[in-house]
Length: 552
Image (cartoon, rainbow, N blue to C red; front, side, top):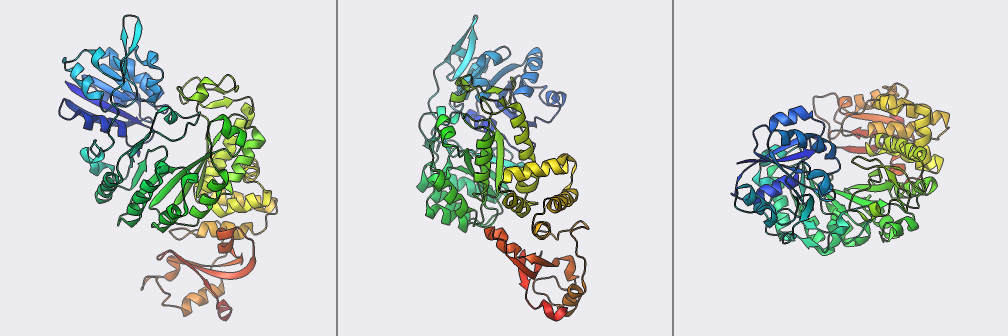
């Protein structure tokens, strides 16, 4: 029997941990092949890839539910036996049992081998643990499988074409469960926390580094739930000689100063942290059962932002008791924490979550189909949500992209609100989707002039020049090769760090500013100061040229 495990990923660069873990759990019981496709692929193209399978298993989530539902009846007509797991199917088994033989709930590693024996004719379906199945006109549910020992399973990616994953995101699970019970999330439904040992986790990370994997994302809901274990793993990751980036979802209020020191000691682009703030409204946090120390989250985030880690902050629009003004306050306060990125997400009303059961009481209306995104609540209208989406897009293009980060901060300072600044820019510039980087810079310059934002041109130029490669400016921002610049290059043929025999200005920029742009980037302080900065793109260095008067 040919069995295919199908992963329908949100993007081509993603990988599917679930199907790899099931294949590893199956051992030699059956011939199992893995197939990963993107939800952006045409359904017919996917069907052609699975024509020869006898049985097909799906891993179903909100991002691939629509495509999964489209494929299932076609495959059933072809005579294939179908089975499915994942939270989207597990919390609505009646929908999927119309086409699938069974729906897995909970953990699959210990249940899947038993189901394989059923496919091979050795076990009855009712003997398979952790499934829903049809019996007559009713749905039956079997007892749950034994919980998985997190140290027993093998590292999944090493077992399956590791060399093809170098430039894709590799998902890794080192714990199950979550110490929190957030009403919008499914992880809080799990009882207890289980961890893979720090020793085995570090061995896996060393293997990834040796394989040359670029991006490793831990899917642990709260990686630092065990603070001391997290420190051991962070120390090891920070000390590795590799180019891999490790992504951890953490609770910032569970950090201590030692944790921050370890993280900040790691090389650039080694550690990426995702911190869920969700809201700064205390009544909202109580309603979603998310107790936290917001003052400590702010303090720890600011400390982390001074180091080399990428700090990604999350907010959720559409939560209870959060109206337009409350959300704007949450947005502005979280932006002030100083993270590298701020993601404005919109509530997804997940089946099985506490908030799903309370939706009517809170007046929460979401889309009928996955991903069940919020449309309105008792506190926000559809027009409010539309406004928030404009702010979300502007934030992504200007700040999260890294292209105009200091410009965004200057605008926020001028408007006394990042939210209002982004909304005003969206109204001024028109359809931001049509603007490329150069056109966006020109629009920002015009916006700064219209709003009379001091030093906008200086900060905008700094954003566009401070890059890994030599930045090119639109004409309205370009000062050109002024005589003093030409003289500086002519009289300094051996500029430190630049390639000998090459034209130095191809690998550098020498620019005049009327504002201490580096001070603003570090502290947000505005200090007028005429000076020249030299940008060395070979050594990723910026230094002030203090003797420019002699070249005038």
